[in-house]
Length: 263
Image (cartoon, rainbow, N blue to C red; front, side, top):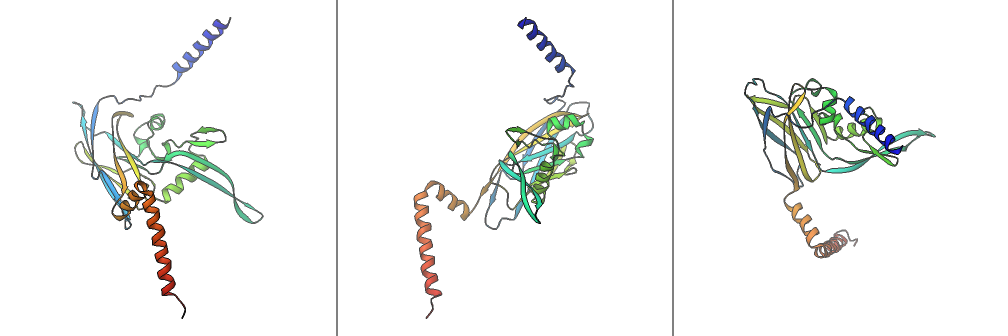
């Protein structure tokens, strides 16, 4: 009896899976793409106000294909967790009443495309491939569970709005330009307060609503100059760094007491 029930359950699952529409997860091989990044490393110093990276790509077409494909370039910074709060007016005061934690979300997210993503493919393909700012996965902690909720969720919308206002999240539906047949160019603006770490660059080519080629590259954002030397010393020689900071503080206090001493 148990075997019959198990067999019936298995048949139901197979029937449900067969009814689902198929979405291609692998490129179909009609194109090939090569990516080049202008700077493999962006160094941040005390006077750093931002940088502009130039991404070049070459889309090699299969014979018989005359038109250039659609191109989407997505840049993701190192993951981090964020908390978004909801405020409410209580007894005349605005206070935090509810919150939502975004777990391991990209600290930087830039989407550059050759045309609006909605014109490239169907909604299901766009979601599957995470094409477009609102379709990138943003995992939230909802009570004891973890999920990526609908795009209209107020916490999700607020998080995207805050990140865009800080220029950490960017989207340009016309950010990729073909400068010659099969050769495209895009620019990515790195803000002055860009998080340190490795940034992943994903390039996807689409034809007829399907991904035909994909490649992944990357670059690093690191401290540079005197700041990098201080950070390295703090990590590798913690005791020496702590003693130096203590002595420096004592010297500053001593000099200040002399300069501002009342006669």
